[in-house]
Length: 506
Ligand SMILES: [Zn+2]
Image (cartoon, rainbow, N blue to C red; front, side, top):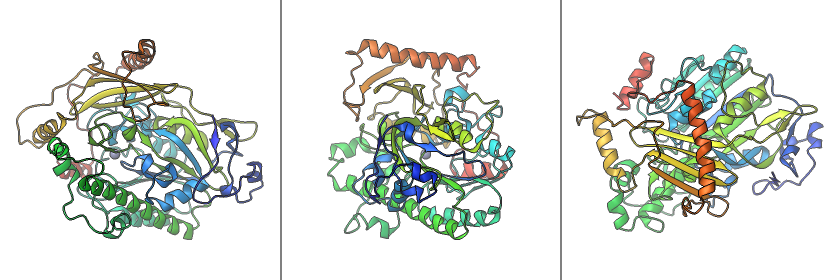
């Protein structure tokens, strides 16, 4: 595995990591050579953790991942001082499933945290419980209500809005985070922050929109009400790259990213003023990406293609964590064991599906890429049920339930009407373990955009990857995970019930 030199923002000179051991401006250093060169002199025991999850942020829309627009100057500056993983993926493209993977260290079908109301089962110790048991303050702050019921183990949990489709709330989340930071500044803490700005609808502040456009587009389309609902008609009219309505949509998404970037910069200024950054690891991450017609559709939570799987991952702890870009493929399911390893937390009682990204070295910890195949799952009975696996650049996808892009607008309409009680009926249940109804195979090094399905030409590769997924499914079934008869609403606090009610869930 190669570690590429830093590019872009700071353009610091390449200096051997050994100097970091001397404590001299370690954040500016570039690890060179192999992945094994990324070494931490010691664990982060006693450090704080601030985990920043930015919802629906696809990695390739950040400058530090090569994007053409200046969406994220502050995150780019953190990336230049931190450890950036060039190939990080989520294990689901639906928010509740992905965050459940993060908090449990288990894949959706492995823990049973799957579906519209996915939540970590009571028998599975959460990351927050691990920190709490180790004496940490634990704070969960989100500017979306969509994570109601996923806060087990956090001493303090606060969902900002009373409805979920809200933009430009990032500064408020930062303000609340600053209040909480002041209260817990003298104790070790784990703070989870969930910024929602890039998630649809895309309604950014005017000044950030004008960072990327000369004037306001006069007739913007709403991602859900206009685009998702009428995509077939829009495509006939030429909606796509080059069409001003499409370009405006992407600009507004980008400006929402810039809004989160600005909110995080404000947070950093405050934390620095409180003296809280010296012993803190900050992780910048996302729960999944976002599609803009890459595969003839928009938003996320419908497929497991790369545009909705690839997410940013940056570890920032200057003086402790070297500055480097890592090519090794990692995924959200690895974060729990990695954080446990870094902070010296026990993992007994957990059946972790991921691997710690740092292993023991002669002194301290050394970056160790995961050896297990990468697996992702999307288990939304209402939309799509599919799994994917990547081995040696080959990506195999097997869907149990799938609607074509042309079918989706109608499916969305019916689903929403059933959920809101406007139409009688139930969502048809599909067997989680049933046979695939649609399979795809791509070779990512030659076809990173997944445009040429070579399933029939590469039978041996298909069989090998199919067998890996079948083994994973067998393991899950042996754990007693079954197709739920219906999507169960999780046990919630009165506040969370109110939040989900406001979201139109029931
Ligand atoms: Zn999400």
